[in-house]
Length: 338
Image 1 (tube, rainbow, N blue to C red):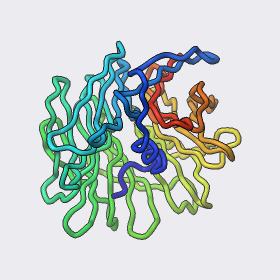
Image 2 (image 1 turned 180 degrees about the horizontal axis):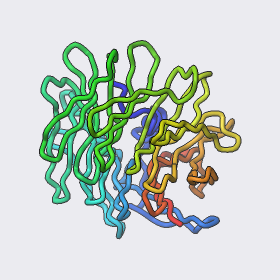
Image 3 (image 1 turned 90 degrees about the vertical axis):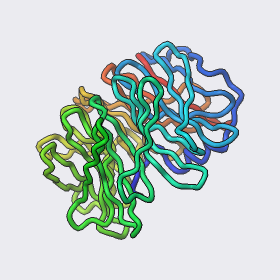
Image 4 (image 1 turned 120 degrees about the vertical axis):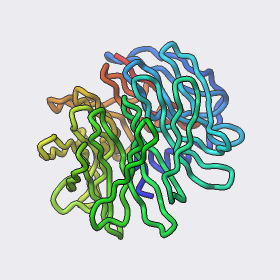
């Protein structure tokens, strides 16, 4: 499945799953510059933080002795773990302002399903009719989710699921693979599609169902759209020559490319309502996080430990950033606040 385009790299995931650190659940590091970092860990395993909402509630996944579990961290730092019934690997991917969480999981028979977790802890399993594999990647403040599913022939379809359970499929004309990566509070969805081979393109679907396709730059071999904000601005990354560049797509279709200093590969992953963007980029020696303002100013950051990599993945309207970082001993999640 097209699925979660580099929200966390395969290398990142593999290192996380292999790590098992004996560390407290969360603790704060001294502020560096104008930022303070809180390290997020769960039990004895490393944690990957995937999303946060505007009230500071965090969700992600952690390495457990019997697989990979989901967790949420309240604004006061209290942790709660959860798994859908029958789950072996659980990956929460989105959280809305109310604290509803959406994601996907693999069961003990190696089948993939979507899920939505209500604020009272009730979990609803999601499988569109005809699905042999389902992933959910985002949830908006109305409880509408976005994702993708695979049918018996191997074709991949994007979909939206309303809070009442209604499924609306999304298929870009001519595509063999379509996946919805996000949906905002106005019901505007976005994602990625492919007509086959290695080419990947972006799309945006209006609330009226109209689909517009685009590429991040002229001649782009791959365009990965990763998030949309409440104003309809989309971010992602694109590659025309083997090197990724971050991009931001305005509502009028204008696309702006950007790269932090010294970047050899840039990935824009999250955007808030104000248009601030977070993501990560590679230099010749390490992976670093960044925040980009609407004016284009880029602040580069690293979790202030002896880190080998820092991945920024989600930013809320207060400018708080979450993600994950790696050291020589394993990986954990972080919350970056001003």
